[in-house]
Length: 325
Figure 1 (cartoon, rainbow, N blue to C red):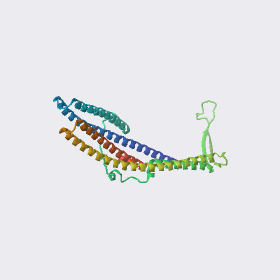
Figure 2 (figure 1 turned 120 degrees about the horizontal axis):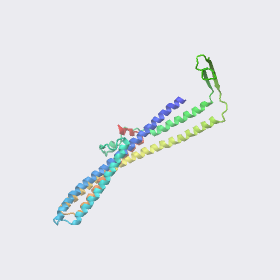
Figure 3 (figure 1 turned 135 degrees about the vertical axis):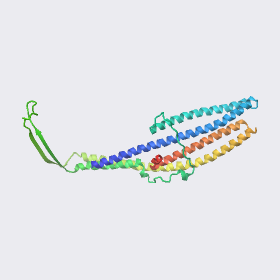
Figure 4 (figure 1 turned 90 degrees about the vertical axis):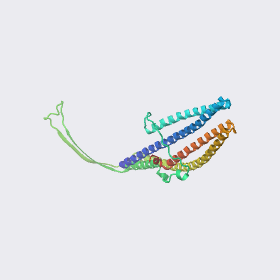
């Protein structure tokens, strides 16, 4: 029984190790996509800053030649300064997130870290993994509870084995000598050999109900664990369903945000053309630029939500280790 318990305990701790590895993979994936989202926001701000810098140069030349108002020139400068401050904040956030990612990966803080971009698919058929395990009992956390239940069962059997009679064989061979001083190692001292051999039979009759109470306690712990396993299984089903709904909703929203981004780009292009022809005020152009920046930010954020929802789906089925392949 002890050998069985030892083997089961080894399997139990191996599962705990695997569970810790999956938790680390989940943290790595979520932090990775968080950094990618920040980098996408930085690229969006860089693109808007480039447009504003070009506009600032045009307005500056017009202002110096009395073709533009100073207030328009200052308004562009204010927007540009605001974007620069936002970009600085993003740089700090990216650096901090990369340092945390290095910590998770065991990379020295002084080492450079460049993240590779992956394809952002918006087709649910491409986003939804086809090789996911549909048996949620495959999840490591549920297997850990099952292995713990096995240990409780072995504990009950181990206690019950105390009711069985035991027969023990023993043997002892020894040598002794006697002396009034420290000369017993002398060759002249006689040594006497002794030997003992026998059997010992123990028949448990009454132990004050100790084993009965211990068995009852072990069974109660096993029954409590049964309820924990049932709740964990239901929670796993709920987590899987929520992850599926989240992924489906994220893909749908990303498609809508993509259409909204295309519309914002079209509005900005038309407004910019009208401004250059003198048919639209600067305020309209700045509002279109702000709307374009917000639309691209919303689209980028939704792309990250799609990827994080995909990670949650992997985690809900116990297949998050596929991310490391």
